Image (cartoon, rainbow, N blue to C red; front, side, top):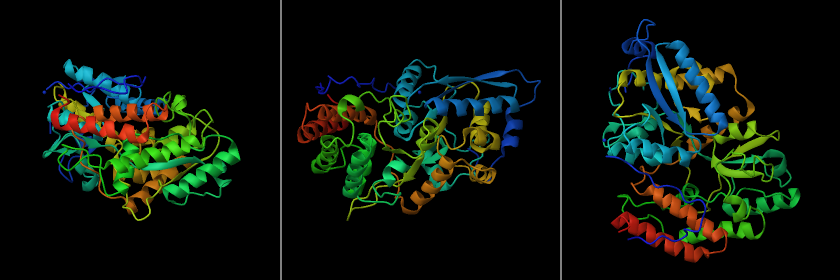
Length: 441
């Protein structure tokens, strides 16, 4: 039996529980109107109710509900019963319980870190060849991320990448104006911002995902190619933990007592929202939600580089739209997914809050209709990222979420001074490899 350390942390989350167990139009497939006719959108048809589960912050909830309202107006014979799941981890804890009970939502928001496990457990409908979804507007390289073992189990909805979101005026005091810098240069800039403002210059943005970016810059990955072992060295992890430990020591980022209370980016618990921090390293799409919560002007930059290292940046689907394999209404579910992807009214409702739309036609319409300052900045930064980004890693193995939580608990132990970076790294890697190789037995 695998012995758990770091159980003292308050952030421990429920592990993913999976219960074991239509067709996307080929390139140049059916349009949204054709799909509507196939599903039967006439008012004389009986009303069908579809359940729709999604995660997000308050802003993401609002824009998603607006898109749902637009769909119901266009298709009055289909009612969408929304199931807002709250923050990311909370949503997937709830979804795993629903899947285990056989009552998952007909349409669900899915993430790259989960899609492999859910697809292989037979919980997602294979959308390869689905006549109700037009995928001709999506780049094949982007659509590829939704394929698992030859089947299409998720339709990417938006593009996303890591970025630094920062207070433009505060960082200008340190002579920083968005140029891409090294990690050491970034630390020096943060120190200057901290001294100039008296606030934390950045959140303590340690996470399994940001470490993955750091590892890629060292020519390593979170997992090996087969997903049976960790794919990085202990020294790489220790260097990452030490980087943030040094920033905490200088008071440049918040202490663990503050960081442990943050639920997610743009949440009221976020020091950026509270006006106590001036930057954070997170997904670029959060700039819209963050800007809506504050009056100070925010700007975007590509994350720091590792001199002499590799490019760690990659483009990730912000999320997928997936359909439950046990849905009673696959045609209507496809129609709704197609609407979210390709309908201009849905695109305008969603905006860029969930990322840059994958549909080329929706992107063109949004750019032509005008965008807000943060949306324009998001468009520009994603375009910059596309020029340098390297291929995304394969979907993570089955135990990724438990390892992710173990990593968060280990980081919190280091932040609280319960473990040194060396001790935390050693124990974490030992337990993670044991879980990957033996299931923790």
